[in-house]
Amino acid sequence: MHKYASLPPKIRDSLNVSWKEGIPAQMMVAIVDTYMVPFALFLGATVFQIGFLVAIPNLIGSISQIFAVRVVRAAGNRLPFLILGATVQAFLLLPVGAFAFLSFPGQIALLIILITAYRILGNLISTVWGSLVSDYLPPHQRGEYFGWRSRIAGTAGVFALAVAGIFLHFGKKFSAVFAFFLVFWAASFCRFLSASFLRKMADSPYELKPENDFTFFMFIRRLRESNFVKYVLYVSSITFAVQLAGPYFTVLMLRDFQFSYLLFMMIQLTGMASSFLFLPLWGKHADIIGNARILKITSLLIPTIPFLWLFSKNIFYLIIVQLYAGFVWAGFELCSANFIYDAVSPEKRVRCYGYFNLFNGIALFLGASLGGFLADRLPPLLGHSIYTLLALSGIARLLAHFALSGKFHEVREGVEKVSSLQLFFSVLGIRPLSGFNRE
Image 1 (spheres, helix red, strand yellow):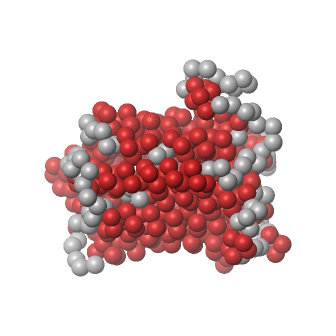
Image 2 (cartoon, rainbow, N blue to C red):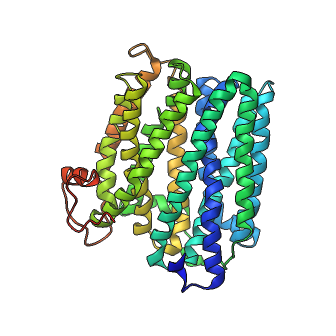
Image 3 (tube, rainbow, N blue to C red):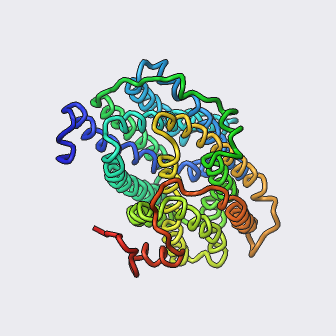
């Protein structure tokens, strides 16, 4: 933290607390996001219900971000909302864990309601937290700090995912009910710990200016002339195509392939670790060639991922596929977020993030819902109807890329022009681009 010595003491202390808060927060996210679908399958959820478990919380959670400014105003400021929101989120996970001991009509529906409330708070917290912490730092130090914090939090998330998977695997031999209960209560404990760190951070005034207000319909009306709106439609189309199959990889592994929780964890962990490994490299390349270039290259590779799953269910083969998937998704996800920072002025960023997430949430809802409806109704491919769904998702991803990737352009000036092959070899370290420094 010596790099921030010039900042006021309260801000330095808050930054020091912030990275510590990120560790339990990311551990909670890793546990809930990875093991919610396996938990629902354990409770007896159908594939169609799994689709709604993924789709509805994300849709309503995304819509809720439109009201982030009003929520901050109602709470008095950003930090009081963050503390309250994190605490309530932690309490919501307690009854979720207790569901392991229960069985009653409407249980999955109630689980969806609880996870929807959890997701609403999580999305609002993410938006408000980013707004607060970005105010702590001057612009030239934000990228470095957030990248450093993300690496620490990401490592903690990988650790939590692995420990929870190992615990479920061995705990299942004694009591799967008790194992799932403890895993979700551990996630709740992590969020309570996160809230305790938030209480030690400093608040800062948040000024709401009427001139930065614009409605959702005003945003949509700028489709023809707005590069950013075209970009939002592009990412949302990719999201729709991906979510046709995204939630059902878990169903394929646990139900159709009969993988143990340990094998499931290993495959999930490989993808996350691969993404974590390549994230800094994609970030450095984006500084040289721009975010749009990487988005368009990775969105051309994303359709290959579901097709690769069709060739074998061998665990070692799937681990290699996940290494590749993590590599591709690291570039796309990093640059899809960074593009917004380049394309939108700071005073409009929270609202534009809200509209971006609303489009993405609608796309996710439609994709996951349609996928859930089709999953067991499609004719089987190589013995599995979900294989057919994967192929359909791959085709939809290709169509989304070719239809919309050429509609938006890079907004940053002075980026280097390189071929796709040059970029690929540079990211792998075979032939670095000119001016690229790996230190």
